[in-house]
Image 1 (cartoon, one colour):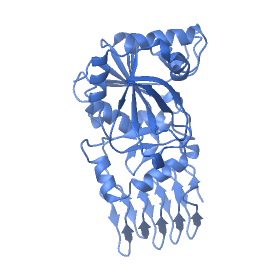
Image 2 (cartoon, rainbow, N blue to C red; image 1 turned 135 degrees about the horizontal axis):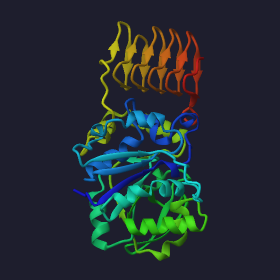
Image 3 (cartoon, rainbow, N blue to C red; image 1 turned 90 degrees about the vertical axis):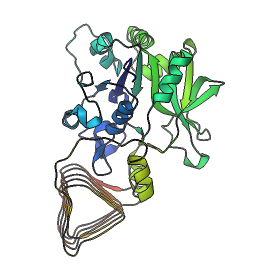
Image 4 (cartoon, rainbow, N blue to C red; image 1 turned 180 degrees about the vertical axis):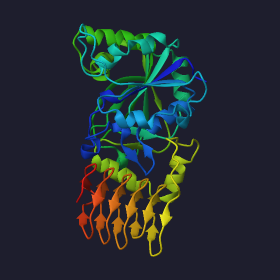
Length: 368
């Protein structure tokens, strides 16, 4: 167990880079592969790492997040001593001068004061992997680091796009970050930090009118701290834009890759569904796809992700697409390289065609 480590999912520090998919929700609430949300991977990894207390800085668009995280047991946080605290913004302190994600740290200072452990593991939702951080936590403690950054090495041809930071190292220490496209040592956005060091950084940032904990408090004064890095292994995915989201979804439709990622060493956990099994009506044809519970299919589905309670009408075709929950696709409609957000209605005989590099996106609750 790592009861002396507090988990923190800092959604407030993330940009809404997924366009229409984050109009009405935070990045952590974005659905993925039919039944998961992006935040599920951070919570699952913390649970498998032996962390028992987690705080979630929920940002502004937190309604769907509250519903999704309503049962901590769904994510492996069982027992009276396990907690998931969902922490929305609180602007009731008239003396508060903090900005950016520092405001969340200031307004939820009690989370850190009341936690009796000495370390905090901070993550976001734009990087996902199915692993655990027990080895990284052990390394952090053994080295007595102020901050340990979680990284990975990728083949040169598989380096994520520009927003992904790369780390610069000297021996076991991390000496800086850059955005070089030629550098394959990638920072995952996860770090483990001594709690007192974290609180000192927060105080410094607020006192000096800084707005971002990582960039202003850590990156700009990295030489003040004893740092290290820990490389993880296994499959990883980055979500820095809609194109990456779509590419990752299509990539995981390969059966072996899907099973290895979601049902490998650790089982990815999510909110438990009570929907009935999918119904494949006479004449339906489904190939190389993920189909969630509650779906009703009368048409053709190929290389697509179909989320819970979606309905695909007779004669309709859905190809290389991602369909969120509660969507209705009318008879004779044709969709290719399309992302339908939750509750979209596609009327009869409509044709929507995007490309692999630029999928056609339909915003939540729209009718076409």
